[in-house]
Length: 210
Image 1 (cartoon, rainbow, N blue to C red):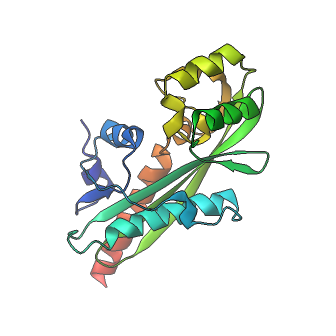
Image 2: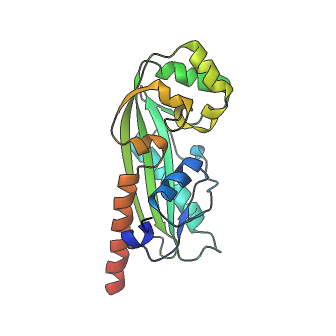
C-alpha cells in the first residue's frame, strides 16, 4: 500500500477531527496513517447566513482548531471537514428526526442539489491553517414514497447531510447522475485533500529553511 504520509511529505502525526466512519475509511483507502479525535464543535457554531462554500470551510476550520488546541496533542497536522447539501439556497445538514429526513428526501426527489465539503488543515504547534472547498452537483431521480419510507426505516439517513448516502447504502439508488467529485459526496474530496496536504507540507518545509 502507498504510504500517503511520505508521499505528501508530512513528517508529523496526522489527526482526523471527525468521527465519520466514511471519512475514516477514505483516509485508510489512501494509505494514510492517522489517529481520530472527534471535535465537539456543532453546526450551530457557524451562521447559516454565510455562503455555503464559506460556511463549510469555516466550520471545518473550527473543528480542526478545536482539536489542535488540545494541550495534550503533540505537534500534529489536524484535518477538519464538514459536508452539507444545498437545495434551492437552503442548507441541509443532518436530519434531526425521521420526519425531518423524509421532508429532506421529498424535497430532493427529482431535483438537482449541490454538495459542499469544506476541508481545513491546522498545525497544532504553530496554528498555521489552510482551508479549501469542493462542490459537486447531484441529480436525484423521482423517488417513490415506499422507497423513502424503507430507507428511513433503516436509520441510515439520520447521520448524513441531506438524509442520504451515495456510498454502500440504499441512498445510492436515488442518484441519477453527478457532476464533479464523487468522493466529495461521500464526505471527503480525496483529490483536493491530497493536493492541499502536499501544499501544506511544502509550506512547512519552506518555513523550516528560513
